[in-house]
Length: 264
Image 1 (cartoon, rainbow, N blue to C red):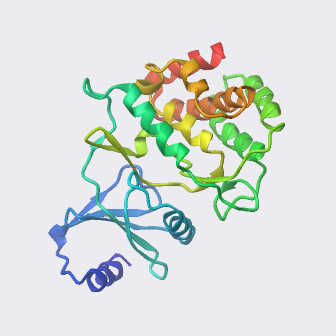
Image 2 (image 1 turned 90 degrees about the vertical axis):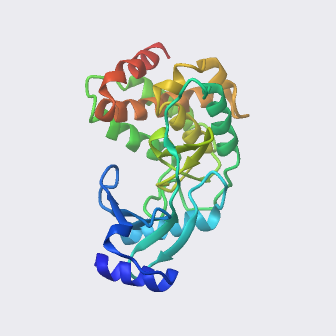
C-alpha cells in the first residue's frame, strides 16, 4: 500500500522518491501512517472518513495559521501537506502568554458558520450541542472516576438553554497541535467538529498549563460577546474534558486543572 502511494506521489509531484527522502513519524499518529518527504511535504495515509473530513475542512478554510493542503487522493486515502518547519509549542522567555492568548482569540474569531444537521464530529455525529459535550465529558470521566461530575451536569443544564450557532471548528485545538514560527501559531491535524467556536478557544487555553497559569480566569471569560452564564458553563465543561486528557497524558500537571475545577 505504501509503495502504491509513493508511486502515485511521484507521478503527481513529478519527482523521484528515494528511501532516504522519507522520514516516518510515530508520535500522535495512531491509526495513520505519517511521513516527511524530502523535508518539504508531510504525507498522511489514513482512513476514508478522515480523508472526507479533511477535504471538507481545507476546502472551507485556507488560512495562514493552518498547515497548507497540497493534495488529497480519495482512492488511495492519502493527503499531502506542506511540511511546517517550526518549534513545538513551549513558552520561552521571549514568548509572552498574552501574545499567544491574543492569537487564540484572533484565530477562533475568524471561524465561519457551517450549516449542518446537528453537532459533533463531522460526517459522523448528529447530536445536540449538549449531547456532544456530555459524551466528551464522559470519555474524560473514564480517566478520572474519582472526580465528581455534578458541576458538569449543572453546567450542561445551563448550555441547554441557549441556541448555539454552528461553526466548523478544529476540535482538537491545543498546543499539542501547534507549531511556532517566529512566535506565530501554525495549526495542524484538525479533527473537524461542528460546534461553538468558544469550544476551541477554551480547549486551547486548557491544553497547556503555561497558558492558563498566566491568564486570569476573569480575562478569559471577558472574551467574546456570548452571555456570561453560558461562557462560564462551557468553560467548566471544556476544562473537565481537558482534565481527562491531562490525567492520561500530563499527570504531573493534573492537579493544576483539578484546582481550577474545584474553585469554579
